[in-house]
Length: 96
Image 1 (cartoon, one colour):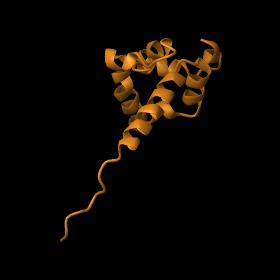
Image 2: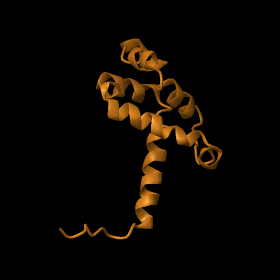
Image 3: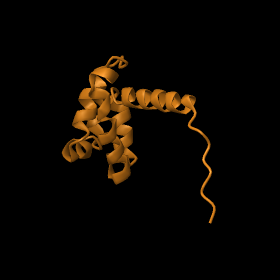
Image 4: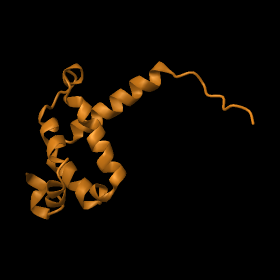
């Protein structure tokens, strides 16, 4: 069996991932968007919950300097809690 040939990592891929994750984490500053995620059952997906946990790296000093909406990190922290995620599915939670 021949070894798998992989292309060399493209630095643009890392930049693209950085920008996409930055954009997504900042979307969490919007309670209406969090409500949308809850209504569409994203918070029932363990892989998505794992992704939210992974995104906590944005709280580190070397990354936080890129955040324009710092309250997104507050919501990211709240989203680590299952009770908060469940509460966000309630219609009144649209305007936290």
